[in-house]
Amino acid sequence: MRTRLSDATELLDAPEHDRAELEQSLAQLAEVNRVLGGHSAVLHALYPFMRRTRRTRILDIGTGSADIPVAIARWAGGLGRGVYIAATDVHPQMRAIASKCTRGCAEIRVEAANALDLPYPDNSFDVVLLSLTLHHFDRDEQVRVLQEAGRVAARGVIINELERCRTNYIGARFLAATRWRGNRLTRHDGPLSVLRAFRKHELADLVQAAGMRVERLDRRFFFRLVLIADARTDSSID
Image (cartoon, rainbow, N blue to C red; front, side):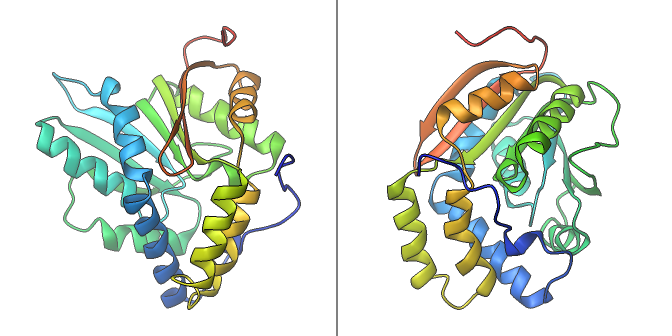
């Protein structure tokens, strides 16, 4: 667990999937986000960025089924706050599933976007989200993704990632053998995601390498790392 596994590829990153298998896998990932703290981690980090007098503009990179944008839209509605969320993914099948899952949600627009070269002007969004997205890239690409996120974020970038540790890996292996055993994608990618994930100092180092300052870096339930980066400065972390 001391060294991040960087030379293995997750099945979800393949260019094409069986639609039913992919939809089930993304639903299982959404369940993990809902039950094991992914949604609550993002909402807690996002609250300070919420505007009172106008819609908060949010970019979600690597949205998958867009379960996090949907959770944000419902939460913001309960607060009486307006949001506009661009839920983006480079994978056309995932965008199709995201469009299905966000049908009727006027606050969310599903769009095609390459995280390495975002098709948006500087400072287009108040905040940019990367939820379980960064670990899919290699080191140099991770820095580039963060630079692009910082470029289009007027206020900040929120990174919601897995923590690489033995307990988290054992938990993923248990789920792979039980709840995920019927889905080849999740059964393979769940444990591998932990091995490709981060420790706190690794995540902070990446953000600094991208020219941003770490505002907060917290460990939250269940073995989630949530980093809030200030995109407006390259000052070093304390």
